Length: 326
Image 1: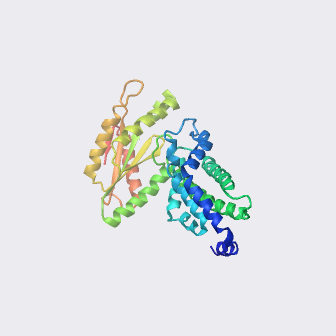
Image 2: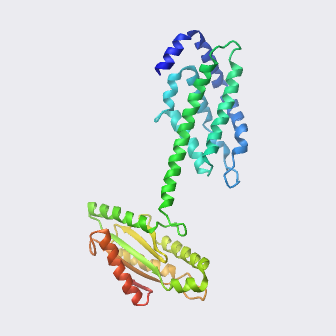
Image 3: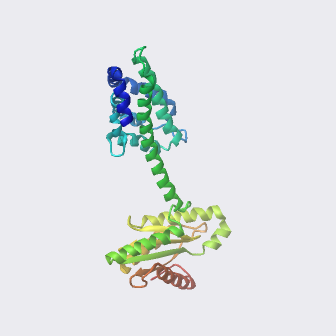
């Protein structure tokens, strides 16, 4: 802030005018909020064309931001409130959250702040005396405040979007379950946690019986629908602590932390029963070959745990499927 201190000390005669403009901003907060809403109203739809249910949510804390801008106009040292941890920083980030949660693109978020910048600059020009010689400094203070607000909002928006992209990258698009690589990674993490806290862990796998023949006879679209249905029913029988994944074209895997063999068997029976409610086109129920292995009873590491279930799956398929084999 040293640059500001030098500049203001040179122009002490202008301080009163800056304070007057700041006070005018505070006095006209609600009017400015309404005008800003009007200028962005056309931009309050989601990308799919639907309207935001509660558009005023985005602007509910505008008076707080306008008050912060007014403080900066009067005294640039208040810019610290727009840094991480500051009250205005948190409010600005909520703008980013709102735009993200309503599915808006990042350019719409930036459009909000462009409209705010334009609205405030027009107002400040009207409030300043015609012989005011520090329009450059006034504009600089406004721009700094709005740039920091926009930066905080975009930072939150980008961070949340990046997090979702990473999450999506680890998910199977058809079922919403984790893909095979993500399941292997998560299994490593959960095994390490189980070892650290000396808790059991169960690794369950479920293969749809005769799915290849069904897919060939009915077509891929029908096969995909069957996969989604099985995934839905399987997922409905899991706890929030369990993590499901698509382990192959017609196979699923479930990581079950803090789960004994007996508890896993009961879960497998529930899954088997629930999936049998799904009927194929010929009226026959969908059946599964369900196998599993546990830590520490059957294996001590990820590779051994997966290998144990591979062997059990081979045996289950050889037995004709529709079986639980632990």
